[in-house]
Image (cartoon, rainbow, N blue to C red):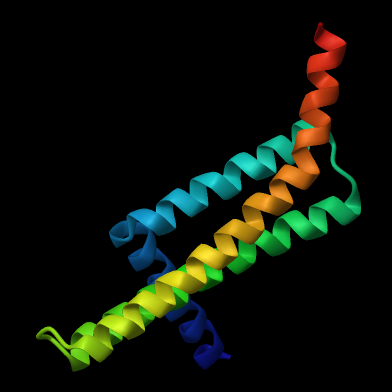
Length: 122
């Protein structure tokens, strides 16, 4: 049991490190928080909540994996190395793909609700 608690401690330490040192991770945390607030305000459906939370998780996970790969790459290749650069670029590309998927999903969920709100306000 002590081991399990310790492993959660390490995991939260990693999350804290990412939140303190990675501006993109903080940006995605803020974006996810805004999406949750919008979900609450628009009272989205259960299916929409599942898509929204999945998108938030996928983006945060890819950002964490990107950070870990960048850190490891810097450790094993402290000087410039073209292949190390490719590793970092590919990992960053994964974050972009996840973020675009989340953005498109957010548009699909929220845009019709925003349009309806604007029409009722006019």
